[in-house]
Amino acid sequence: TAGITQAPTSQILAAGRSMTLRCTQDMRHNAMYWYRQDLGLGLRLIHYSNTAGTTGKGEVPDGYSVSRANTDDFPLTLASAVPSQTSVYFCASSLGPGGNIQYFGAGTRLSVL
Amino acid sequence: RKEVEQDPGPFNVPEGATVAFNCTYSNSASQSFFWYRQDCRKEPKLLMSVYSSGNEDGRFTAQLNRASQYISLLIRDSKLSDSATYLCVVNLQQAGTALIFGKGTTLSVSS
Image (cartoon, rainbow over all chains, first blue to last red; front, side, top):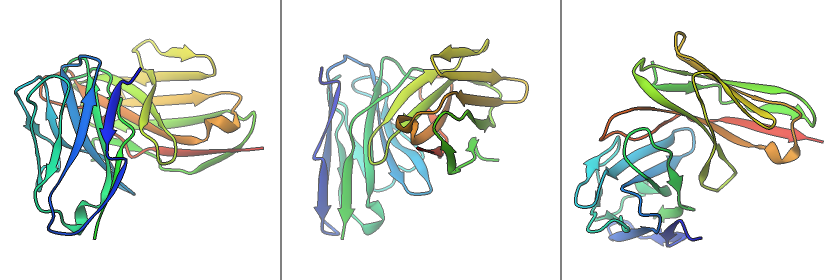
C-alpha cells in the first residue's frame, strides 16, 4: 500500500532558486497538509487544504504556496528559496478536516545554501 | 501559554521500566487527542487516540483529564524498541484547522 508519497526524499537547493515538493496520496482523503519540522520547534503547519480546490494558510505560510487541483496531489512550492527554509518537510492527509487522524509521508529533507 | 506543552526529556530508562509522559493543552474547546510516535529522521505515526474514559493498547495506556486540560501516556515494561520521540497532539473539532503538535518527549530505553 502506497499511502502518502513525497518526492524528492532530499534536495540541496541554491538560495534564490525555486522548487516544488511533491505529495501524492492514494487514500482518497479529503484533507491534506504541509508541515515543516525544525529542531527545537516541532512540527509547524505551513498550508492546508480541506478539500480539492481549496487551500488555507497555516502558522508559517510566508515564502510558500500550494495548490490542490485534485484530491490526490498537494504540491508545495518555494518560489525563491532562502536558507531559513532549510528544514524537513512533511506532507500529511486525513479523511476529513478538523480532528481526524493524520497520516504522514516520509518527508523531504531540504537544504538551502 | 503554548497550545500544547510537553516535557522534552530525554527520559532515560532501563528495559522493563514503567515511564509516564505528560502533556497540557491550552484550549478548553479541544475535542480530539492523540499520541504520535516519531523515530529519528522518520515521519510521525499514530500511536493511539486518547478517549475521555482512558484507553489501553497493550503496554500503553492513555488518560485524558479535561478539567485539568491534561493528557498522559504510560508505557509499561519498556522495550528497546520504544526508544523514540512521543508527540502529544490535540485539535479543535472545526473545519479549517489542523492538528496541533507538541514538540515531543524523547524516550531512550537502554539494556
